[in-house]
Length: 222
Image (cartoon, rainbow, N blue to C red; front, side, top):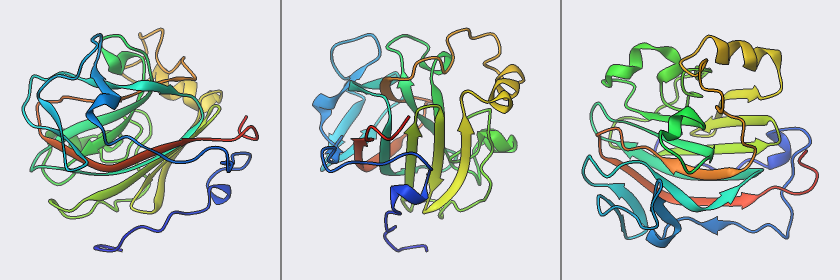
């Protein structure tokens, strides 16, 4: 699989009851104007778009969110971090700080050297602090990884390099037990929103994202 472009899997094979429709095309998220800093109207200069790649060039830029909001969606992008790098992508996020206290995170991490790798549910593609990735399919440092999220009502799936690595149901007892045992136990608004912004984390490390695109799911997603 390494070095090869991941071929998208039909959405019908990802999650029962979810479907994209011809009326819901892909939309690129590669323009600086599609992002802004949390609680602000503009994007901090530390976050830049270079040849279609969104890059955190220096720490201190703060977390950012998408201008638009999304409910049920299919999102995919490619990402890489530097040695020991740590970042994350939030979804269905609220425009409030700290963003992590309210939104679920797809972890972006160097699993070989980052300090946070010790906890399984903190590794790359994890549902951060809640669901550990089922398999280690992370590519070598310096190579881009292909990530994918499918959010359909309460059901969400994380994919990494063509492999489904984590899934959960917001309405399930299993999810409630996981939250109660996590760092989010005292966050009353955590994962409550079913529609919200995408968010990207400034964790003090450079992060590179490209080929990011999203589309809404059809009415059969419920």
